[in-house]
Image 1 (cartoon, one colour):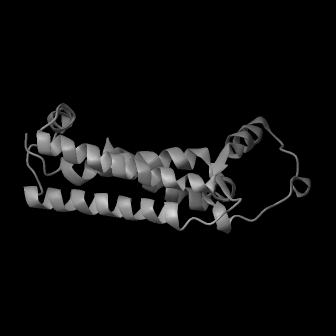
Image 2 (cartoon, one colour):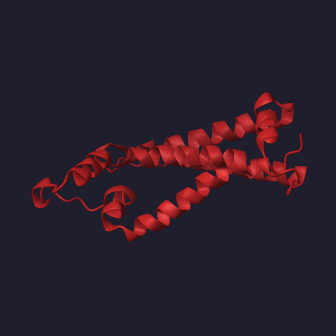
Length: 164
């Protein structure tokens, strides 16, 4: 499932750069987004465009990026505890993994987990302490996708090396 999520994300990210309206309304946010007044925009011509405009208008403050790192740290701590205690969640996911052979040693799993925890903690600290006030906004879908990214990353750092 994690591989499917990351592959789909890569395809959407690459494809999104090729579709100007998708890139402009969804992928460009924050300081890279140009403010275009509503008066300068022509009215939507069809229902699909109106729906796309509505979906892209559901936005949250860019400061919500901090949520990514909260999710990352919580995920790392959760999976670290699960791995150390041979918890039910890690046993369930390991049993669902279709790959019998491991590609990582236990030391590599611990190192990857520790690096993920460190990176998430560092970014969370930076987000809290170095944040500057901003009026920029991002599409709520990007917030959800980013949080799913960090949840899948939390699993991906250990799933190929776990032996249960």
